[in-house]
Length: 110
Image (tube, rainbow, N blue to C red; front, side, top):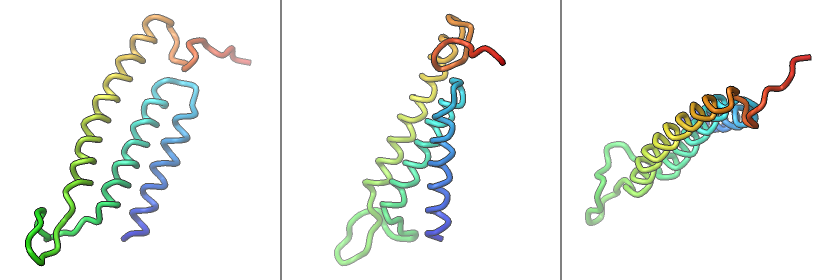
């Protein structure tokens, strides 16, 4: 199970990095989103989730650490807000420049 989890994080990171290197705005936004999902999964995996364990500390009992879960929940909310802001920013840039390239100009076709 750990290997599948690690492969999933690696694939999300690789796809996100590939999309970040594109010249168009929408793939860059999708790449940022995929990369943030990979980081969220990494943080969640570092929390060592324990199914069936209580989320609070009891005397002599094993417990699930709530801090990584709270960090991931906060990161999801911030990532959603960031994605919404970048989509609006990209749409405004498209309206002003008439191009969806990252640098704002079309590359002539050869």
